[in-house]
Amino acid sequence: MNIKNVYILEDRGILFVNGFDAKEFLQNLVTNDINKVDNSNSCFASLLTPQGKFLFDFLIVKHKNGYFIDCEKKQADNLFKKFNIYKFRSKVEITNLSNEFVIAAFSYEKFMSFKESKDILGYTFKYREDPILLDPRHKKLGGRLIINLEKLYLSLKKLDLKSSEPNEYYNFSHELGIPQRDMDKLSDKLFGIECNFEELNGIDFKKGCYVGQENTSRIKLRNKLSKRLLPIQLIKGNLEEGASIFNNKNEVGKVLINNDQPFGLIKYLSDHFNHEAEFRSENAIFKIKKPDWI
Image 1 (cartoon, rainbow, N blue to C red):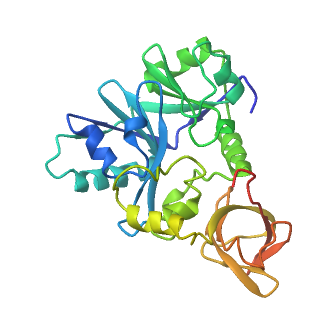
Image 2 (tube, helix red, strand yellow):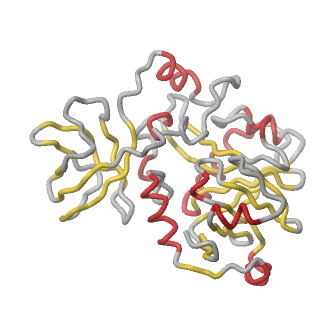
């Protein structure tokens, strides 16, 4: 990413969770440890089914007396509803601010150019009253600014950032092996740990109970992780969601996300998986990349 480029991620949404029980509420639900989240540290986390299957992923950022939940915008309403199902009698207020706040992403080099920055994943500081953070998943995803839409363009001008096509950012994320678009297509189709959330700093195995914790810990402790979500590099043809993936006649996975940045759930320990090979589905030929951070 160019140091002066900024990507306005209009397909990201923002929920705000606050209230007396906000911290405990999130701690009992999500895969990461909310005790680590404060004004100088943000985290990546997910919400799973009780069986440990993926439902939602998001970044959690401390803001004033509550927490910003930075999620995919088209999932914001469903995440809002799911949080409210779990709310019970907790003293928690959940607000959907997706039409008021926006996410602006920029390079790691730009983040490190701020005098307040530190080279620590998730490190967070305020630009005036708005949080800027180093993406807690991978530092090459760069920095993020969460800001009120009304202040966005004046702030970007003062920060010497020029708006660029968001697809550049998502292509870069895909090259890194980190999915961010159409995550709803993964819902209940794979375990959270199969999404590589441990390697992306999204699961804390030392914290107490959370939704889906039992199966997640069992897969980890028994070394049962045999499938992973990996990026697909299309060579020719058309990918179809749910299509089986073959190396010769041996099935090694399925296509789960078939957009411009496709991903498949791959049996990466199989003798038939070789990341240098060309794979096929019914109507496509492609490669599968295993990121260097796995």
